[in-house]
Length: 164
Image 1 (cartoon, helix red, strand yellow):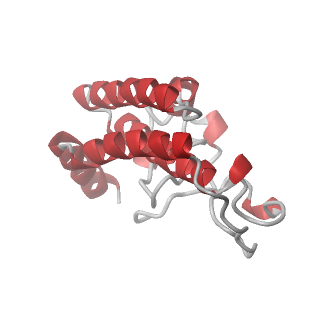
Image 2 (cartoon, helix red, strand yellow):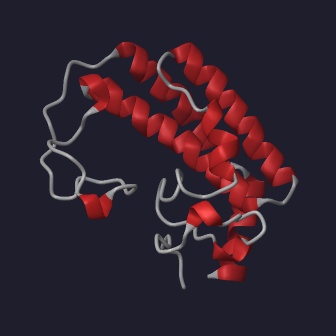
Image 3 (cartoon, helix red, strand yellow):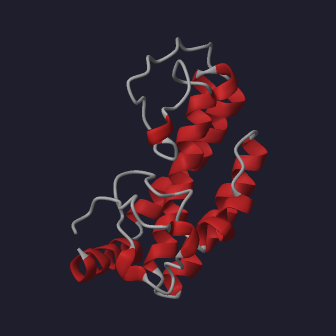
């Protein structure tokens, strides 16, 4: 099965805490808004509109990340890592593009739920929004801390060895 994220699974019907063997790390943020029960647990805490919101959000999500690691729940830890990464990427998008719209036109129907340009042109950048840039930097620091956590790296290696 490898490392590629499997978009064919019916994530709304699956509890990946009970079935970690179905989880694939994938690339970047793949699956961040799909994998349950983690999406439901983490998403309510995810905010990046202001530096203050980003700080509170990233602190809460990083604490969840550590709790998942302590419980040997790699899938939860990886999902928390993905939310930290998404906090960075979304805040950067809003810092660079007023209103957060990066690409011209709608997402093709067959690509909904997946990130990327999907053949659409990138819109010109706006002058940088300093509040969103600061929010992005806050998330980036926590995301880096999560990626570099030795326990996370160990659990990731174990997960990949066991299920890839």
